[in-house]
Image (cartoon, rainbow, N blue to C red; front, top):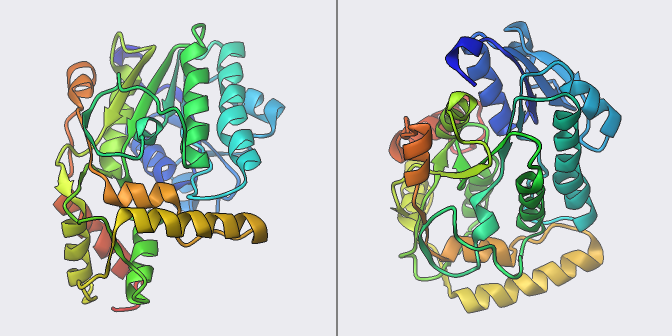
Length: 335
Protein backbone atom coordinates (compact mmCIF):
# COMPACT_ATOMS: atom_id res chain seq x y z
CA UNK A 1 0.00 0.00 0.00
CA UNK A 2 1.56 3.30 -1.04
CA UNK A 3 1.36 6.78 0.44
CA UNK A 4 -0.93 7.85 -2.39
CA UNK A 5 -3.59 5.58 -0.85
CA UNK A 6 -3.62 7.69 2.30
CA UNK A 7 -6.90 8.45 4.08
CA UNK A 8 -8.26 4.95 3.55
CA UNK A 9 -11.14 3.19 5.30
CA UNK A 10 -9.81 1.12 8.15
CA UNK A 11 -11.51 -1.34 10.51
CA UNK A 12 -9.96 -1.86 13.93
CA UNK A 13 -11.28 -4.90 15.77
CA UNK A 14 -10.92 -4.39 19.50
CA UNK A 15 -11.01 -0.66 18.87
CA UNK A 16 -12.45 0.02 22.32
CA UNK A 17 -9.66 -1.79 24.19
CA UNK A 18 -6.36 -0.67 25.68
CA UNK A 19 -4.26 -0.89 22.50
CA UNK A 20 -7.15 -0.44 20.09
CA UNK A 21 -8.14 2.97 21.48
CA UNK A 22 -4.61 4.31 21.02
CA UNK A 23 -4.45 2.94 17.49
CA UNK A 24 -7.83 4.42 16.53
CA UNK A 25 -6.75 7.82 17.85
CA UNK A 26 -3.49 7.72 15.87
CA UNK A 27 -5.28 6.71 12.67
CA UNK A 28 -7.81 9.53 13.09
CA UNK A 29 -4.94 11.99 13.58
CA UNK A 30 -3.64 10.91 10.18
CA UNK A 31 -6.94 11.60 8.48
CA UNK A 32 -8.16 8.04 7.97
CA UNK A 33 -11.79 7.00 8.13
CA UNK A 34 -11.77 4.62 11.09
CA UNK A 35 -14.37 2.06 12.11
CA UNK A 36 -13.84 0.69 15.61
CA UNK A 37 -15.35 -2.67 16.40
CA UNK A 38 -16.23 -3.43 20.00
CA UNK A 39 -18.99 -4.10 22.49
CA UNK A 40 -18.71 -1.29 25.04
CA UNK A 41 -18.31 2.25 23.71
CA UNK A 42 -18.65 4.09 27.04
CA UNK A 43 -14.89 4.75 27.22
CA UNK A 44 -14.47 5.96 23.65
CA UNK A 45 -16.98 8.81 23.41
CA UNK A 46 -14.18 11.25 22.66
CA UNK A 47 -12.96 9.11 19.77
CA UNK A 48 -16.47 9.05 18.31
CA UNK A 49 -16.62 12.83 18.62
CA UNK A 50 -13.37 12.93 16.68
CA UNK A 51 -14.94 10.89 13.88
CA UNK A 52 -14.44 7.22 14.76
CA UNK A 53 -17.42 5.16 13.63
CA UNK A 54 -18.58 2.55 16.16
CA UNK A 55 -19.30 -0.99 14.99
CA UNK A 56 -21.09 -2.93 17.73
CA UNK A 57 -19.98 -6.50 17.12
CA UNK A 58 -18.68 -9.58 18.90
CA UNK A 59 -16.06 -11.70 17.14
CA UNK A 60 -18.36 -14.70 17.63
CA UNK A 61 -21.01 -13.04 15.42
CA UNK A 62 -19.72 -14.27 12.09
CA UNK A 63 -22.10 -12.52 9.71
CA UNK A 64 -21.72 -9.22 11.58
CA UNK A 65 -17.93 -9.48 11.30
CA UNK A 66 -18.19 -10.23 7.58
CA UNK A 67 -20.42 -7.17 7.14
CA UNK A 68 -17.98 -4.98 9.11
CA UNK A 69 -15.19 -5.86 6.68
CA UNK A 70 -17.18 -4.72 3.64
CA UNK A 71 -15.76 -1.66 1.93
CA UNK A 72 -12.58 -1.53 4.03
CA UNK A 73 -9.10 -1.12 2.62
CA UNK A 74 -7.31 -2.39 5.72
CA UNK A 75 -8.27 -4.40 8.79
CA UNK A 76 -6.30 -4.25 12.02
CA UNK A 77 -7.22 -7.35 14.00
CA UNK A 78 -6.44 -6.25 17.56
CA UNK A 79 -9.37 -7.81 19.44
CA UNK A 80 -8.56 -10.74 21.71
CA UNK A 81 -9.45 -12.29 25.03
CA UNK A 82 -6.40 -11.37 27.14
CA UNK A 83 -6.49 -12.95 30.59
CA UNK A 84 -4.04 -14.96 32.70
CA UNK A 85 -6.66 -17.66 33.24
CA UNK A 86 -10.02 -18.77 31.92
CA UNK A 87 -12.06 -21.39 30.16
CA UNK A 88 -10.34 -22.73 27.04
CA UNK A 89 -13.63 -22.62 25.15
CA UNK A 90 -13.77 -18.84 25.52
CA UNK A 91 -10.19 -18.39 24.35
CA UNK A 92 -10.79 -20.70 21.40
CA UNK A 93 -14.04 -19.08 20.30
CA UNK A 94 -12.73 -15.51 20.52
CA UNK A 95 -9.04 -15.74 19.71
CA UNK A 96 -8.95 -18.67 17.29
CA UNK A 97 -12.37 -18.88 15.67
CA UNK A 98 -12.69 -15.08 15.83
CA UNK A 99 -9.46 -14.73 13.88
CA UNK A 100 -10.69 -17.26 11.33
CA UNK A 101 -13.84 -15.17 10.94
CA UNK A 102 -11.88 -11.95 10.42
CA UNK A 103 -9.70 -13.65 7.81
CA UNK A 104 -12.81 -14.91 6.00
CA UNK A 105 -14.26 -11.38 6.08
CA UNK A 106 -11.02 -10.07 4.56
CA UNK A 107 -11.13 -12.82 1.94
CA UNK A 108 -14.75 -12.13 0.96
CA UNK A 109 -14.23 -8.39 0.64
CA UNK A 110 -10.75 -8.37 -0.93
CA UNK A 111 -9.09 -6.49 1.92
CA UNK A 112 -5.77 -5.13 0.77
CA UNK A 113 -3.98 -5.73 4.08
CA UNK A 114 -4.88 -7.46 7.35
CA UNK A 115 -2.53 -6.61 10.22
CA UNK A 116 -2.83 -9.10 13.05
CA UNK A 117 -1.67 -8.30 16.59
CA UNK A 118 -0.25 -11.43 18.19
CA UNK A 119 2.14 -11.74 21.16
CA UNK A 120 5.75 -12.71 21.63
CA UNK A 121 4.43 -15.19 24.20
CA UNK A 122 3.71 -17.65 21.39
CA UNK A 123 7.39 -18.67 21.42
CA UNK A 124 7.95 -18.53 25.20
CA UNK A 125 8.98 -21.97 26.47
CA UNK A 126 9.07 -21.24 30.20
CA UNK A 127 12.87 -20.92 30.27
CA UNK A 128 15.40 -18.12 29.86
CA UNK A 129 15.40 -16.83 26.29
CA UNK A 130 17.97 -14.35 24.96
CA UNK A 131 17.66 -12.21 21.81
CA UNK A 132 14.82 -14.23 20.35
CA UNK A 133 13.97 -13.64 16.70
CA UNK A 134 10.86 -14.32 14.67
CA UNK A 135 12.33 -17.68 13.60
CA UNK A 136 12.24 -19.10 17.14
CA UNK A 137 10.18 -22.32 17.26
CA UNK A 138 6.86 -22.59 19.02
CA UNK A 139 7.05 -24.60 22.26
CA UNK A 140 5.69 -28.13 22.32
CA UNK A 141 3.31 -27.24 25.16
CA UNK A 142 1.70 -24.01 26.37
CA UNK A 143 1.11 -23.29 30.07
CA UNK A 144 -1.33 -20.48 29.27
CA UNK A 145 -4.63 -20.83 27.39
CA UNK A 146 -4.07 -17.30 26.08
CA UNK A 147 -0.71 -18.04 24.41
CA UNK A 148 -1.99 -21.39 23.14
CA UNK A 149 -4.93 -19.63 21.50
CA UNK A 150 -2.71 -16.92 20.00
CA UNK A 151 -0.40 -19.61 18.60
CA UNK A 152 -3.35 -21.34 16.93
CA UNK A 153 -4.56 -17.99 15.57
CA UNK A 154 -1.09 -17.23 14.19
CA UNK A 155 -1.11 -20.53 12.34
CA UNK A 156 -4.42 -19.55 10.73
CA UNK A 157 -3.00 -16.19 9.65
CA UNK A 158 0.13 -17.81 8.25
CA UNK A 159 -1.98 -20.33 6.32
CA UNK A 160 -4.22 -17.65 4.76
CA UNK A 161 -2.09 -17.31 1.63
CA UNK A 162 -4.95 -15.66 -0.25
CA UNK A 163 -5.18 -12.79 2.27
CA UNK A 164 -2.35 -10.17 2.47
CA UNK A 165 -1.41 -10.42 6.14
CA UNK A 166 1.24 -9.07 8.52
CA UNK A 167 1.77 -10.36 12.06
CA UNK A 168 2.97 -7.97 14.77
CA UNK A 169 4.21 -9.56 18.00
CA UNK A 170 4.61 -7.04 20.86
CA UNK A 171 6.11 -8.12 24.18
CA UNK A 172 4.48 -7.01 27.46
CA UNK A 173 2.61 -3.87 26.43
CA UNK A 174 2.32 -1.26 29.18
CA UNK A 175 1.07 2.30 29.44
CA UNK A 176 -1.85 4.41 30.66
CA UNK A 177 -4.93 2.21 30.82
CA UNK A 178 -3.19 -1.16 31.03
CA UNK A 179 -4.37 -3.71 33.57
CA UNK A 180 -1.31 -5.65 34.67
CA UNK A 181 0.57 -2.80 36.42
CA UNK A 182 -2.36 -1.70 38.65
CA UNK A 183 -2.91 -5.38 39.51
CA UNK A 184 0.77 -5.77 40.50
CA UNK A 185 0.61 -2.58 42.56
CA UNK A 186 -2.48 -3.74 44.36
CA UNK A 187 -0.70 -6.97 45.29
CA UNK A 188 2.22 -4.86 46.58
CA UNK A 189 -0.08 -2.64 48.63
CA UNK A 190 -1.56 -5.75 50.24
CA UNK A 191 1.99 -7.10 50.79
CA UNK A 192 1.19 -10.04 48.53
CA UNK A 193 3.77 -9.31 45.84
CA UNK A 194 6.64 -11.79 45.84
CA UNK A 195 9.83 -11.60 43.83
CA UNK A 196 9.85 -14.81 41.87
CA UNK A 197 13.31 -16.09 41.06
CA UNK A 198 16.64 -14.42 41.77
CA UNK A 199 15.55 -10.99 40.56
CA UNK A 200 18.32 -10.71 37.98
CA UNK A 201 16.27 -11.74 34.95
CA UNK A 202 16.10 -9.26 32.11
CA UNK A 203 13.03 -8.59 30.04
CA UNK A 204 11.89 -6.47 27.16
CA UNK A 205 8.72 -4.46 27.62
CA UNK A 206 6.91 -2.29 25.10
CA UNK A 207 5.28 1.06 25.71
CA UNK A 208 1.87 1.16 24.06
CA UNK A 209 2.66 4.10 21.77
CA UNK A 210 5.61 2.16 20.35
CA UNK A 211 3.26 -0.67 19.40
CA UNK A 212 0.96 1.86 17.74
CA UNK A 213 3.95 3.32 15.90
CA UNK A 214 4.84 -0.12 14.54
CA UNK A 215 1.24 -0.78 13.50
CA UNK A 216 1.15 2.51 11.60
CA UNK A 217 4.40 1.66 9.82
CA UNK A 218 2.94 -1.73 8.86
CA UNK A 219 0.10 0.03 7.06
CA UNK A 220 2.35 1.34 4.28
CA UNK A 221 5.58 -0.67 4.36
CA UNK A 222 6.28 -2.52 1.14
CA UNK A 223 7.04 -6.24 0.71
CA UNK A 224 6.04 -7.24 4.24
CA UNK A 225 2.91 -9.33 3.64
CA UNK A 226 3.29 -12.87 4.90
CA UNK A 227 5.91 -11.80 7.44
CA UNK A 228 6.05 -11.55 11.24
CA UNK A 229 7.68 -8.79 13.31
CA UNK A 230 8.61 -8.65 16.99
CA UNK A 231 8.14 -5.23 18.58
CA UNK A 232 9.71 -4.12 21.87
CA UNK A 233 11.39 -1.10 23.44
CA UNK A 234 14.71 -2.93 22.89
CA UNK A 235 16.10 -1.98 26.30
CA UNK A 236 16.57 -5.37 28.04
CA UNK A 237 15.74 -4.07 31.51
CA UNK A 238 16.27 -5.93 34.79
CA UNK A 239 12.58 -6.52 35.42
CA UNK A 240 12.56 -6.55 39.23
CA UNK A 241 14.76 -3.45 39.42
CA UNK A 242 12.21 -1.60 37.29
CA UNK A 243 9.34 -2.82 39.45
CA UNK A 244 11.17 -1.64 42.59
CA UNK A 245 11.63 1.81 41.05
CA UNK A 246 7.88 1.97 40.51
CA UNK A 247 7.20 0.84 44.09
CA UNK A 248 9.58 3.51 45.37
CA UNK A 249 7.84 6.18 43.30
CA UNK A 250 4.53 5.16 44.87
CA UNK A 251 5.98 5.07 48.41
CA UNK A 252 5.44 1.34 48.70
CA UNK A 253 7.86 -1.08 50.30
CA UNK A 254 10.61 -2.28 48.00
CA UNK A 255 11.41 -5.17 50.35
CA UNK A 256 9.81 -8.18 48.73
CA UNK A 257 9.87 -11.75 49.92
CA UNK A 258 11.67 -13.98 47.43
CA UNK A 259 10.03 -17.12 46.11
CA UNK A 260 12.23 -19.55 44.14
CA UNK A 261 10.69 -20.44 40.81
CA UNK A 262 10.23 -24.18 41.59
CA UNK A 263 8.20 -23.31 44.68
CA UNK A 264 6.25 -20.68 42.75
CA UNK A 265 5.39 -23.24 40.10
CA UNK A 266 4.18 -25.72 42.71
CA UNK A 267 2.03 -23.06 44.35
CA UNK A 268 0.69 -21.89 40.97
CA UNK A 269 -0.20 -25.45 39.97
CA UNK A 270 -2.19 -25.88 43.18
CA UNK A 271 -3.94 -22.55 42.62
CA UNK A 272 -4.80 -23.51 39.05
CA UNK A 273 -6.29 -26.83 40.16
CA UNK A 274 -8.38 -25.11 42.79
CA UNK A 275 -9.50 -22.48 40.27
CA UNK A 276 -10.60 -25.23 37.90
CA UNK A 277 -12.74 -26.78 40.64
CA UNK A 278 -14.42 -23.63 41.93
CA UNK A 279 -14.37 -21.45 38.81
CA UNK A 280 -12.33 -18.47 40.00
CA UNK A 281 -9.07 -16.89 38.81
CA UNK A 282 -5.89 -18.06 40.59
CA UNK A 283 -3.75 -15.39 42.21
CA UNK A 284 -0.73 -16.87 40.40
CA UNK A 285 -0.46 -19.05 37.29
CA UNK A 286 2.49 -21.09 36.06
CA UNK A 287 2.74 -18.88 32.99
CA UNK A 288 2.87 -15.68 35.06
CA UNK A 289 5.43 -17.20 37.43
CA UNK A 290 7.80 -18.08 34.61
CA UNK A 291 7.23 -14.73 32.90
CA UNK A 292 8.29 -12.95 36.09
CA UNK A 293 11.31 -15.18 36.76
CA UNK A 294 12.85 -15.85 33.34
CA UNK A 295 14.92 -13.68 31.05
CA UNK A 296 13.07 -12.78 27.85
CA UNK A 297 14.89 -10.51 25.47
CA UNK A 298 14.20 -10.09 21.78
CA UNK A 299 15.93 -9.05 18.58
CA UNK A 300 13.94 -6.44 16.64
CA UNK A 301 16.32 -6.23 13.68
CA UNK A 302 13.63 -7.38 11.24
CA UNK A 303 11.25 -4.60 12.29
CA UNK A 304 14.07 -2.08 12.03
CA UNK A 305 14.98 -3.28 8.55
CA UNK A 306 11.56 -3.77 6.96
CA UNK A 307 9.37 -1.31 8.88
CA UNK A 308 12.02 1.30 9.71
CA UNK A 309 10.80 0.86 13.28
CA UNK A 310 12.50 2.60 16.18
CA UNK A 311 10.95 3.03 19.65
CA UNK A 312 9.61 6.56 20.07
CA UNK A 313 9.09 6.44 23.86
CA UNK A 314 11.69 5.02 26.26
CA UNK A 315 10.82 2.69 29.13
CA UNK A 316 11.66 5.42 31.63
CA UNK A 317 9.42 7.96 29.94
CA UNK A 318 6.72 5.33 29.53
CA UNK A 319 6.78 4.62 33.26
CA UNK A 320 6.50 8.36 33.98
CA UNK A 321 3.48 8.67 31.69
CA UNK A 322 1.84 5.58 33.16
CA UNK A 323 2.24 6.70 36.77
CA UNK A 324 1.03 10.21 35.90
CA UNK A 325 -2.08 8.64 34.37
CA UNK A 326 -2.71 6.57 37.50
CA UNK A 327 -2.55 9.73 39.59
CA UNK A 328 -4.75 11.69 37.18
CA UNK A 329 -7.46 9.06 37.18
CA UNK A 330 -7.05 8.31 40.89
CA UNK A 331 -6.48 4.66 40.23
CA UNK A 332 -3.88 4.57 42.97
CA UNK A 333 -4.95 5.24 46.55
CA UNK A 334 -1.53 6.39 47.80
CA UNK A 335 -2.14 9.81 46.24
